[in-house]
Amino acid sequence: GLAALLVRCAVPVPCSPARDGEGEGGGGAEGGAGAGGGGRCGGGGDGAAMAVAASSPRVDFFSAVVSDLAEAQDVSAGTSSYSAHVRSCARALEAAGAHGASALVLLDEPGASTEPAEGAAVAQAVIEELLARGARLVATTHASPLKLLALRDTRLQVAAMQRRRVDRRNGAGAAALPSYAILVGAVGGSYALDAAAREGLPEALLARARGLLPGAEGDADDG
Image 1 (cartoon, helix red, strand yellow):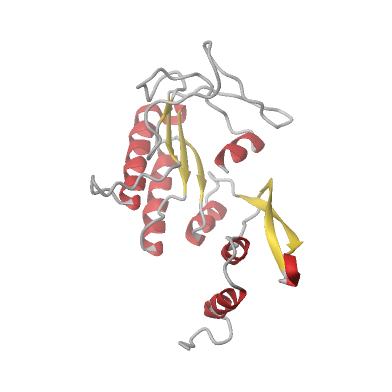
Image 2 (cartoon, rainbow, N blue to C red):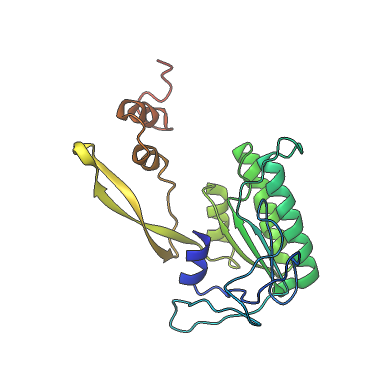
């Protein structure tokens, strides 16, 4: 997801490999939640290459890269999924304060794993502060408040994953499958029902779910 977005939108890609244990410096990647320590993009030498699918590509090097891409819930350490997200955001803010535009921040679903409205509010405040500190930011979200923020704030560019409609097997209607093409300037939906159908949930259950959506006929029916 984020890797495809970086490549297709020609976002600068950090290419200097990090040594074991390093999280910053020379474009080395700082491991986000559950990602361990430093990372690398490609193999040996002083740098590594990644093809950028753009007519006028540009590749920059960053002094710090902070990512929050993986699940880091740890019951033994008392760390919830949301706490792990927040810790990654704190590391990102620290890197942005220290390095400004030389900091690259990758956030997957900021504000997730908690009450949706509160989580989106915290995520928006973090995003606004990261931008104020000059960091380069790539974030993915299903939260409507964050999509609206991207439409309002001129410092942000919104994009969506293109979907294609295909007929389901056994005449069960159409589904929206990802084409992995990025539509810059578009706001996408979440397609939760399509994903649920694709994973095999019963049609009767999906019909009930549709009826529970706001505005659906019988959405207040407890039956």
